[in-house]
Amino acid sequence: MKVNKIFPTELWSDRVENYKQMNVDLLDSIYNMKDYDKRGIEISNQKGWHSNYFHTYKKSTNLQRIENIISEKINSIEFKYNLKSSLFWANINPKGAENSIHNHRESIYSGVYYIKIPQDSGNLVLLDMYHYYLDSKEIPKYTINPEEGMLYIFRGFLPHKVEQNLSNFDRVSISFNFYE
Image (tube, rainbow, N blue to C red):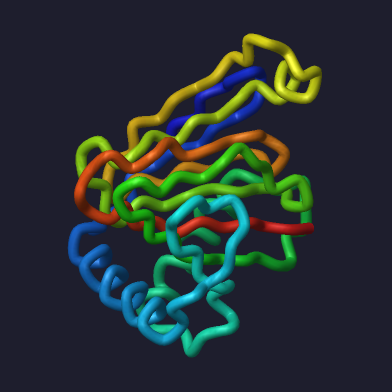
């Protein structure tokens, strides 16, 4: 797995093996969740759909599989913490949707797995927490142009946002938090 140090904190990234068919199956599961729970929840999402946490739904085999893959990746990078619990949720961001700046400070690790990424559907932007919390006028940032099948893991305290989806198609991803 590739590791980049940014701001200086780590950003882990990896392409999930055999992601194409898995993503087709995940899309089906996620849109079924949305049909069941049209409202979802509102946290940092602007106009998009944010599912409830996966444990509140009857979990499909597809969702369990991606949870296992992500958990294995997390466990391969961390031995310092005894990570006991995790939360997973889906995001469907249609045209015009975005996620405002936020963090997951209660979690040790957070991240996102990309399922469907049309061109111009919004970048993931990670912000330098030091400058962000000092309320600096210029905040260094690290921008990721997401790709389908890519998994990104970062520290939960890292401020981040997702830019507006300018395409005519949904951007679909799964996000997660891991706790001690």
